[in-house]
Image: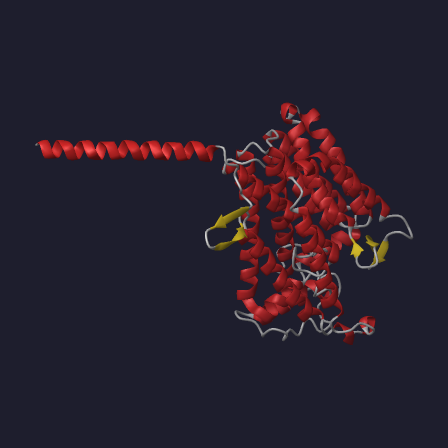
Length: 424
Protein backbone atom coordinates (compact mmCIF):
# COMPACT_ATOMS: atom_id res chain seq x y z
CA UNK A 1 0.00 0.00 0.00
CA UNK A 2 2.82 2.37 0.89
CA UNK A 3 4.43 1.68 -2.55
CA UNK A 4 1.20 2.56 -4.35
CA UNK A 5 0.90 5.75 -2.29
CA UNK A 6 4.46 6.87 -3.12
CA UNK A 7 3.95 6.13 -6.86
CA UNK A 8 0.72 8.12 -6.83
CA UNK A 9 2.45 11.05 -5.15
CA UNK A 10 5.27 10.93 -7.71
CA UNK A 11 2.83 10.97 -10.68
CA UNK A 12 0.86 13.80 -9.04
CA UNK A 13 4.02 15.86 -8.59
CA UNK A 14 5.07 15.22 -12.19
CA UNK A 15 1.63 16.31 -13.44
CA UNK A 16 1.80 19.55 -11.42
CA UNK A 17 5.28 20.37 -12.76
CA UNK A 18 4.15 19.66 -16.35
CA UNK A 19 1.08 21.90 -15.94
CA UNK A 20 3.22 24.69 -14.51
CA UNK A 21 5.68 24.42 -17.44
CA UNK A 22 2.90 24.51 -20.04
CA UNK A 23 1.37 27.50 -18.30
CA UNK A 24 4.64 29.39 -18.40
CA UNK A 25 5.08 28.58 -22.12
CA UNK A 26 1.54 29.79 -22.85
CA UNK A 27 2.12 33.08 -21.02
CA UNK A 28 5.37 33.62 -22.91
CA UNK A 29 3.79 32.90 -26.31
CA UNK A 30 0.84 35.20 -25.58
CA UNK A 31 3.05 38.22 -26.21
CA UNK A 32 4.47 36.83 -29.47
CA UNK A 33 2.73 38.41 -32.53
CA UNK A 34 0.99 36.09 -34.96
CA UNK A 35 2.96 35.65 -38.21
CA UNK A 36 0.37 34.51 -40.67
CA UNK A 37 2.29 35.27 -43.86
CA UNK A 38 5.38 33.14 -43.11
CA UNK A 39 6.10 30.06 -41.06
CA UNK A 40 9.78 29.36 -40.35
CA UNK A 41 10.54 25.67 -39.85
CA UNK A 42 13.72 24.13 -38.47
CA UNK A 43 15.99 23.06 -41.29
CA UNK A 44 13.51 24.20 -43.99
CA UNK A 45 13.25 27.43 -45.98
CA UNK A 46 10.55 29.93 -45.04
CA UNK A 47 7.40 29.41 -47.08
CA UNK A 48 4.33 31.58 -47.65
CA UNK A 49 1.19 30.50 -45.82
CA UNK A 50 -2.17 31.99 -44.96
CA UNK A 51 -3.89 32.09 -48.37
CA UNK A 52 -6.14 29.75 -50.31
CA UNK A 53 -3.72 27.95 -52.61
CA UNK A 54 -6.48 25.81 -54.14
CA UNK A 55 -8.36 28.95 -55.20
CA UNK A 56 -5.24 30.30 -56.88
CA UNK A 57 -4.58 27.02 -58.70
CA UNK A 58 -8.18 26.71 -59.94
CA UNK A 59 -8.01 30.25 -61.35
CA UNK A 60 -4.64 29.56 -63.00
CA UNK A 61 -5.85 26.27 -64.51
CA UNK A 62 -8.95 27.95 -65.96
CA UNK A 63 -6.79 30.72 -67.42
CA UNK A 64 -4.29 28.20 -68.85
CA UNK A 65 -7.06 26.16 -70.46
CA UNK A 66 -8.56 29.37 -71.82
CA UNK A 67 -5.20 30.37 -73.32
CA UNK A 68 -4.88 26.98 -75.02
CA UNK A 69 -8.42 27.08 -76.41
CA UNK A 70 -8.15 30.72 -77.55
CA UNK A 71 -5.10 29.71 -79.59
CA UNK A 72 -6.93 26.70 -81.00
CA UNK A 73 -10.03 28.77 -81.85
CA UNK A 74 -8.12 31.64 -83.49
CA UNK A 75 -5.23 29.92 -85.29
CA UNK A 76 -7.15 29.69 -88.58
CA UNK A 77 -8.54 33.25 -88.50
CA UNK A 78 -5.87 34.70 -90.88
CA UNK A 79 -7.49 32.59 -93.63
CA UNK A 80 -10.41 35.00 -93.40
CA UNK A 81 -9.86 38.07 -95.64
CA UNK A 82 -10.91 40.30 -92.73
CA UNK A 83 -7.92 39.05 -90.70
CA UNK A 84 -5.55 38.41 -93.62
CA UNK A 85 -2.88 40.75 -92.20
CA UNK A 86 -2.78 38.92 -88.85
CA UNK A 87 -0.34 36.19 -87.92
CA UNK A 88 -1.75 32.83 -86.74
CA UNK A 89 -0.39 33.68 -83.26
CA UNK A 90 -1.86 37.22 -83.18
CA UNK A 91 -4.65 36.50 -80.70
CA UNK A 92 -2.48 34.09 -78.69
CA UNK A 93 0.19 36.78 -78.21
CA UNK A 94 -2.34 39.42 -77.17
CA UNK A 95 -4.02 36.98 -74.78
CA UNK A 96 -0.66 36.15 -73.16
CA UNK A 97 0.01 39.88 -72.71
CA UNK A 98 -3.42 40.31 -71.11
CA UNK A 99 -2.80 37.41 -68.72
CA UNK A 100 0.63 38.78 -67.74
CA UNK A 101 -0.89 42.24 -67.09
CA UNK A 102 -3.70 40.62 -65.11
CA UNK A 103 -1.38 38.51 -62.94
CA UNK A 104 0.94 41.44 -62.22
CA UNK A 105 -2.05 43.64 -61.36
CA UNK A 106 -3.38 40.87 -59.12
CA UNK A 107 -0.05 40.54 -57.27
CA UNK A 108 -0.03 44.30 -56.64
CA UNK A 109 -3.71 44.38 -55.66
CA UNK A 110 -3.38 41.61 -53.05
CA UNK A 111 -0.93 43.84 -51.13
CA UNK A 112 -3.63 46.49 -50.55
CA UNK A 113 -5.63 46.12 -47.28
CA UNK A 114 -9.37 45.61 -47.67
CA UNK A 115 -10.00 48.68 -45.48
CA UNK A 116 -8.45 50.81 -48.24
CA UNK A 117 -10.83 49.37 -50.84
CA UNK A 118 -13.76 50.06 -48.49
CA UNK A 119 -12.74 53.73 -48.27
CA UNK A 120 -12.35 54.20 -52.02
CA UNK A 121 -15.33 52.03 -53.07
CA UNK A 122 -17.64 54.96 -54.02
CA UNK A 123 -14.81 56.56 -56.05
CA UNK A 124 -14.16 53.34 -57.98
CA UNK A 125 -17.84 53.37 -58.94
CA UNK A 126 -17.66 57.06 -59.94
CA UNK A 127 -14.59 56.37 -62.14
CA UNK A 128 -16.46 53.54 -63.87
CA UNK A 129 -19.39 55.90 -64.57
CA UNK A 130 -17.04 58.52 -66.03
CA UNK A 131 -15.47 55.91 -68.33
CA UNK A 132 -18.93 54.65 -69.37
CA UNK A 133 -19.76 58.22 -70.40
CA UNK A 134 -16.41 58.70 -72.14
CA UNK A 135 -16.84 55.59 -74.29
CA UNK A 136 -20.03 57.10 -75.79
CA UNK A 137 -18.22 60.27 -76.97
CA UNK A 138 -17.62 60.14 -80.77
CA UNK A 139 -13.91 59.92 -81.50
CA UNK A 140 -13.13 58.60 -78.03
CA UNK A 141 -14.96 55.28 -77.88
CA UNK A 142 -14.13 52.57 -80.41
CA UNK A 143 -16.96 51.09 -82.51
CA UNK A 144 -16.87 47.35 -83.26
CA UNK A 145 -19.79 45.61 -85.02
CA UNK A 146 -21.95 48.69 -84.44
CA UNK A 147 -21.39 48.75 -80.64
CA UNK A 148 -19.40 51.51 -78.93
CA UNK A 149 -17.95 49.65 -75.92
CA UNK A 150 -14.16 50.10 -75.93
CA UNK A 151 -11.57 52.76 -75.14
CA UNK A 152 -8.41 52.25 -77.25
CA UNK A 153 -5.33 52.33 -75.00
CA UNK A 154 -2.69 51.14 -77.46
CA UNK A 155 -1.65 47.89 -75.76
CA UNK A 156 -5.29 46.87 -75.35
CA UNK A 157 -8.85 48.08 -75.84
CA UNK A 158 -10.32 48.72 -72.39
CA UNK A 159 -14.01 47.95 -71.82
CA UNK A 160 -15.41 50.22 -69.04
CA UNK A 161 -18.30 47.81 -68.37
CA UNK A 162 -15.75 45.36 -66.88
CA UNK A 163 -14.65 48.00 -64.36
CA UNK A 164 -18.33 48.80 -63.73
CA UNK A 165 -18.93 45.19 -62.63
CA UNK A 166 -16.28 45.46 -59.93
CA UNK A 167 -17.33 49.02 -59.15
CA UNK A 168 -20.98 48.08 -58.55
CA UNK A 169 -19.89 45.20 -56.28
CA UNK A 170 -17.77 47.59 -54.19
CA UNK A 171 -20.36 50.34 -54.14
CA UNK A 172 -23.27 48.03 -53.24
CA UNK A 173 -21.26 46.40 -50.42
CA UNK A 174 -20.19 49.81 -49.08
CA UNK A 175 -23.75 51.12 -49.45
CA UNK A 176 -25.25 48.25 -47.43
CA UNK A 177 -22.72 48.83 -44.62
CA UNK A 178 -23.60 52.54 -44.50
CA UNK A 179 -27.38 51.92 -44.68
CA UNK A 180 -27.60 49.12 -42.12
CA UNK A 181 -29.86 51.19 -39.83
CA UNK A 182 -32.44 52.06 -42.52
CA UNK A 183 -32.60 48.92 -44.63
CA UNK A 184 -36.18 48.22 -43.45
CA UNK A 185 -37.33 51.56 -44.92
CA UNK A 186 -37.86 51.09 -48.65
CA UNK A 187 -37.21 54.60 -49.96
CA UNK A 188 -34.30 55.41 -47.65
CA UNK A 189 -32.63 52.06 -48.18
CA UNK A 190 -33.23 51.41 -51.86
CA UNK A 191 -33.74 54.57 -53.90
CA UNK A 192 -30.06 55.72 -54.05
CA UNK A 193 -29.00 52.25 -55.17
CA UNK A 194 -31.88 52.10 -57.66
CA UNK A 195 -30.88 55.47 -59.15
CA UNK A 196 -27.23 54.35 -59.46
CA UNK A 197 -28.27 51.14 -61.19
CA UNK A 198 -30.60 53.06 -63.51
CA UNK A 199 -27.78 55.41 -64.57
CA UNK A 200 -25.49 52.47 -65.30
CA UNK A 201 -28.30 50.79 -67.23
CA UNK A 202 -28.95 53.82 -69.43
CA UNK A 203 -25.24 54.18 -70.24
CA UNK A 204 -24.81 50.47 -71.04
CA UNK A 205 -27.94 50.28 -73.19
CA UNK A 206 -26.69 53.30 -75.15
CA UNK A 207 -23.58 51.32 -76.22
CA UNK A 208 -25.56 48.89 -76.44
CA UNK A 209 -24.48 46.17 -73.98
CA UNK A 210 -27.53 44.54 -72.44
CA UNK A 211 -25.53 41.48 -71.37
CA UNK A 212 -23.22 43.52 -69.14
CA UNK A 213 -26.22 45.33 -67.67
CA UNK A 214 -27.82 41.99 -66.78
CA UNK A 215 -24.67 40.91 -64.92
CA UNK A 216 -24.34 44.26 -63.13
CA UNK A 217 -28.02 44.17 -62.12
CA UNK A 218 -27.56 40.61 -60.79
CA UNK A 219 -24.51 41.69 -58.73
CA UNK A 220 -26.32 44.68 -57.24
CA UNK A 221 -29.52 42.77 -56.48
CA UNK A 222 -27.60 39.84 -55.00
CA UNK A 223 -25.65 42.10 -52.63
CA UNK A 224 -28.85 43.90 -51.57
CA UNK A 225 -30.48 40.56 -50.81
CA UNK A 226 -27.46 39.16 -48.96
CA UNK A 227 -27.10 42.46 -47.10
CA UNK A 228 -30.49 41.95 -45.49
CA UNK A 229 -32.87 44.17 -47.46
CA UNK A 230 -36.48 43.38 -46.60
CA UNK A 231 -37.79 40.45 -48.68
CA UNK A 232 -40.84 42.34 -49.96
CA UNK A 233 -38.63 45.21 -51.09
CA UNK A 234 -36.29 42.81 -52.85
CA UNK A 235 -39.01 41.06 -54.83
CA UNK A 236 -40.55 44.42 -55.74
CA UNK A 237 -37.20 45.57 -57.16
CA UNK A 238 -36.83 42.27 -59.04
CA UNK A 239 -40.32 42.73 -60.51
CA UNK A 240 -39.42 46.25 -61.66
CA UNK A 241 -36.19 45.02 -63.31
CA UNK A 242 -37.95 42.11 -65.02
CA UNK A 243 -40.62 44.54 -66.26
CA UNK A 244 -37.91 46.86 -67.59
CA UNK A 245 -36.24 43.99 -69.49
CA UNK A 246 -39.60 42.92 -70.94
CA UNK A 247 -40.29 46.48 -72.12
CA UNK A 248 -36.81 46.73 -73.70
CA UNK A 249 -37.41 43.50 -75.60
CA UNK A 250 -40.95 44.52 -76.58
CA UNK A 251 -39.93 47.89 -78.02
CA UNK A 252 -36.72 46.69 -79.68
CA UNK A 253 -37.24 44.76 -82.90
CA UNK A 254 -33.60 43.58 -82.84
CA UNK A 255 -33.94 42.03 -79.37
CA UNK A 256 -37.39 40.64 -80.17
CA UNK A 257 -36.00 38.86 -83.23
CA UNK A 258 -33.25 37.35 -81.07
CA UNK A 259 -35.86 35.89 -78.71
CA UNK A 260 -37.81 34.36 -81.61
CA UNK A 261 -34.57 32.98 -83.07
CA UNK A 262 -33.69 31.45 -79.71
CA UNK A 263 -37.11 29.77 -79.46
CA UNK A 264 -36.85 28.26 -82.96
CA UNK A 265 -33.21 28.40 -84.12
CA UNK A 266 -33.60 25.84 -86.93
CA UNK A 267 -36.32 27.81 -88.70
CA UNK A 268 -35.18 28.85 -92.19
CA UNK A 269 -35.95 32.45 -91.32
CA UNK A 270 -33.46 32.46 -88.44
CA UNK A 271 -30.92 29.68 -89.13
CA UNK A 272 -28.90 31.91 -91.47
CA UNK A 273 -29.69 35.10 -89.57
CA UNK A 274 -30.22 35.82 -85.88
CA UNK A 275 -29.75 32.16 -84.91
CA UNK A 276 -26.65 31.59 -87.03
CA UNK A 277 -24.24 31.59 -84.07
CA UNK A 278 -26.55 29.43 -81.96
CA UNK A 279 -27.07 26.77 -84.63
CA UNK A 280 -23.34 26.44 -85.32
CA UNK A 281 -22.62 26.36 -81.59
CA UNK A 282 -25.06 23.46 -81.22
CA UNK A 283 -23.48 21.70 -84.22
CA UNK A 284 -20.02 22.08 -82.62
CA UNK A 285 -21.22 20.69 -79.29
CA UNK A 286 -22.99 17.81 -81.06
CA UNK A 287 -19.83 16.88 -82.97
CA UNK A 288 -17.84 16.74 -79.73
CA UNK A 289 -19.89 13.86 -78.27
CA UNK A 290 -18.28 12.38 -75.12
CA UNK A 291 -14.53 12.90 -75.61
CA UNK A 292 -14.36 15.39 -78.49
CA UNK A 293 -12.72 15.40 -81.90
CA UNK A 294 -9.29 16.12 -80.44
CA UNK A 295 -7.41 19.31 -79.62
CA UNK A 296 -7.20 21.52 -82.72
CA UNK A 297 -9.68 19.40 -84.69
CA UNK A 298 -12.68 21.72 -84.55
CA UNK A 299 -14.39 22.33 -87.90
CA UNK A 300 -16.83 25.00 -86.71
CA UNK A 301 -13.99 27.37 -85.79
CA UNK A 302 -13.01 27.46 -89.50
CA UNK A 303 -15.12 30.56 -90.18
CA UNK A 304 -18.47 28.84 -89.54
CA UNK A 305 -18.86 29.92 -85.90
CA UNK A 306 -18.40 33.70 -85.44
CA UNK A 307 -16.55 34.91 -82.32
CA UNK A 308 -15.32 31.40 -81.56
CA UNK A 309 -12.41 32.76 -79.48
CA UNK A 310 -14.60 35.11 -77.39
CA UNK A 311 -18.33 34.56 -76.77
CA UNK A 312 -18.46 30.99 -78.11
CA UNK A 313 -15.23 29.56 -76.75
CA UNK A 314 -17.19 26.89 -74.85
CA UNK A 315 -18.54 25.54 -78.15
CA UNK A 316 -14.98 24.99 -79.39
CA UNK A 317 -14.12 23.31 -76.08
CA UNK A 318 -17.13 21.06 -76.52
CA UNK A 319 -16.20 20.13 -80.10
CA UNK A 320 -12.53 19.45 -79.36
CA UNK A 321 -12.69 18.10 -75.78
CA UNK A 322 -16.24 16.78 -75.76
CA UNK A 323 -18.67 16.46 -72.87
CA UNK A 324 -15.80 15.70 -70.50
CA UNK A 325 -14.08 19.02 -71.28
CA UNK A 326 -17.28 21.04 -70.91
CA UNK A 327 -18.12 19.25 -67.65
CA UNK A 328 -14.69 20.06 -66.20
CA UNK A 329 -15.14 23.75 -67.06
CA UNK A 330 -18.59 23.77 -65.43
CA UNK A 331 -17.21 22.06 -62.30
CA UNK A 332 -14.34 24.57 -62.17
CA UNK A 333 -16.67 27.58 -62.22
CA UNK A 334 -19.07 25.94 -59.76
CA UNK A 335 -16.22 25.33 -57.31
CA UNK A 336 -14.87 28.87 -57.82
CA UNK A 337 -18.25 30.53 -57.19
CA UNK A 338 -18.92 28.34 -54.15
CA UNK A 339 -15.49 29.15 -52.70
CA UNK A 340 -15.98 32.90 -53.19
CA UNK A 341 -19.31 32.69 -51.35
CA UNK A 342 -17.66 30.71 -48.54
CA UNK A 343 -14.95 33.38 -48.13
CA UNK A 344 -17.69 36.02 -48.04
CA UNK A 345 -19.69 34.19 -45.36
CA UNK A 346 -16.53 33.73 -43.32
CA UNK A 347 -15.82 37.48 -43.49
CA UNK A 348 -19.38 38.34 -42.41
CA UNK A 349 -19.05 35.91 -39.47
CA UNK A 350 -15.92 37.87 -38.46
CA UNK A 351 -17.99 41.09 -38.55
CA UNK A 352 -16.35 42.30 -41.76
CA UNK A 353 -19.57 43.07 -43.63
CA UNK A 354 -18.11 45.05 -46.54
CA UNK A 355 -15.50 42.37 -47.26
CA UNK A 356 -18.10 39.60 -47.02
CA UNK A 357 -20.65 41.25 -49.30
CA UNK A 358 -17.97 42.20 -51.84
CA UNK A 359 -16.63 38.62 -52.01
CA UNK A 360 -20.14 37.26 -52.50
CA UNK A 361 -20.77 39.91 -55.17
CA UNK A 362 -17.70 38.71 -57.08
CA UNK A 363 -19.03 35.16 -56.67
CA UNK A 364 -22.26 36.30 -58.34
CA UNK A 365 -20.23 37.96 -61.10
CA UNK A 366 -18.08 34.92 -61.88
CA UNK A 367 -20.84 32.34 -61.46
CA UNK A 368 -23.60 34.41 -63.07
CA UNK A 369 -21.63 35.48 -66.14
CA UNK A 370 -20.27 31.95 -66.63
CA UNK A 371 -23.83 30.59 -66.32
CA UNK A 372 -25.15 33.03 -68.94
CA UNK A 373 -22.26 32.35 -71.34
CA UNK A 374 -22.66 28.58 -70.99
CA UNK A 375 -26.44 28.86 -71.34
CA UNK A 376 -26.02 30.81 -74.58
CA UNK A 377 -23.52 28.29 -75.98
CA UNK A 378 -25.78 25.37 -75.05
CA UNK A 379 -28.93 27.00 -76.41
CA UNK A 380 -30.54 27.28 -72.97
CA UNK A 381 -30.54 31.12 -73.05
CA UNK A 382 -30.97 33.73 -75.80
CA UNK A 383 -27.74 34.85 -77.50
CA UNK A 384 -25.91 37.60 -75.59
CA UNK A 385 -22.48 39.11 -76.09
CA UNK A 386 -20.87 37.91 -72.86
CA UNK A 387 -17.48 36.26 -72.57
CA UNK A 388 -16.54 33.31 -70.38
CA UNK A 389 -14.69 34.79 -67.36
CA UNK A 390 -10.96 34.04 -67.08
CA UNK A 391 -11.00 32.05 -70.33
CA UNK A 392 -12.32 33.96 -73.34
CA UNK A 393 -10.14 36.35 -75.36
CA UNK A 394 -10.38 39.90 -74.02
CA UNK A 395 -7.71 42.04 -72.36
CA UNK A 396 -9.80 44.25 -70.08
CA UNK A 397 -11.98 41.31 -69.00
CA UNK A 398 -8.94 39.23 -67.93
CA UNK A 399 -7.40 42.26 -66.21
CA UNK A 400 -10.50 43.10 -64.15
CA UNK A 401 -11.17 39.42 -63.36
CA UNK A 402 -7.67 39.13 -61.87
CA UNK A 403 -7.97 42.36 -59.85
CA UNK A 404 -11.42 41.45 -58.50
CA UNK A 405 -10.29 37.96 -57.49
CA UNK A 406 -7.06 39.33 -55.94
CA UNK A 407 -9.16 41.48 -53.59
CA UNK A 408 -11.13 38.38 -52.57
CA UNK A 409 -7.84 36.56 -51.97
CA UNK A 410 -6.78 39.45 -49.73
CA UNK A 411 -10.08 39.11 -47.86
CA UNK A 412 -9.33 35.42 -47.29
CA UNK A 413 -5.80 36.22 -46.06
CA UNK A 414 -7.15 38.73 -43.55
CA UNK A 415 -9.86 36.28 -42.47
CA UNK A 416 -7.17 33.70 -41.68
CA UNK A 417 -5.09 36.24 -39.78
CA UNK A 418 -8.08 37.21 -37.63
CA UNK A 419 -8.99 33.59 -36.92
CA UNK A 420 -5.41 32.97 -35.74
CA UNK A 421 -5.55 35.86 -33.34
CA UNK A 422 -3.72 38.41 -35.48
CA UNK A 423 -4.87 41.65 -37.05
CA UNK A 424 -6.23 42.09 -40.57
